[in-house]
Length: 190
Length: 188
Image (cartoon, rainbow over all chains, first blue to last red; front, side):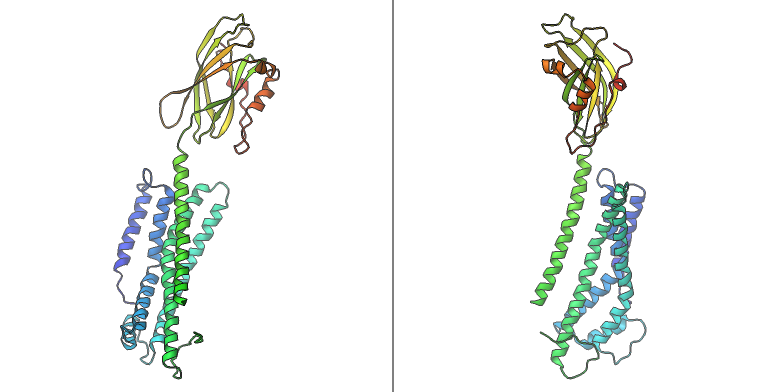
């Protein structure tokens, strides 16, 4: 993926600045409680962690939206994906297959990202049920909930891509009912 | 139709997430703010301990901050039935911590070698206390006119004190402070 990472540097800077300030003990005290600092750090941390997912899903969703509303032709969109993908995808691949290949490339990152969420949830729950760890559990819950905001953004884009892919597949099935498109189409039920 | 349902569902999940996060932050911020407000101690009961010749106060700390009783001043005013002259005990050191949300028994000695209390006698006590947020000295003023009921209930003063200091069911167990532990060493 050769797309721009401009926002990543801004987020990373904010995240690292927050971590350093929290480490030095300059963030909490008069204005912020420890679990609120953890909330902010969790939010930026998971934004950085899921940045490539956010970027790719937003890109794919926007492109699918353009294709669905016929603002962009499929050939043009395919060309853009070919440029973005490392290696040279075979020229006979359709737009749908190119999209699937691209999303498959992101799949391990997606798995790791949601895996981190589950891991953090388990740690937060484990601390919550540990007697005598209330203060730590509170901070961990703040971290988790802050992360959940970023996870919600990623999840919404993820869902949107899934939804738009379904729409596109439906459109394909309606426009060329007999021709094979090379992609597994869902049953055209409605 | 499908699109509406899909994005409504996502919006609802987002709303629930925001509700949870808002509740979490607001609740814990409120707990932190309220947890730092000291309360004033309240005398919720008085018993005359005939054996030890002292008055046992049940002092409640209704707040979340521990309070430190520094000293007390006791003013005895005789009633009509008493032969004892009036006296004052000033600034008797106490140094007793009242834990949060508990009722503590505080035994204050009356003047040694004085007659037992009679109905109608008045005992006025000023408890001086401090809390961690300030260096000021605060005080609680409590006046007790001894009634027949208190004299009758004072035969088993320690049991009586135990009854009087039973906290409400929601609070933690009362740390029973024995009269010996709080007795002043000066023995006035």
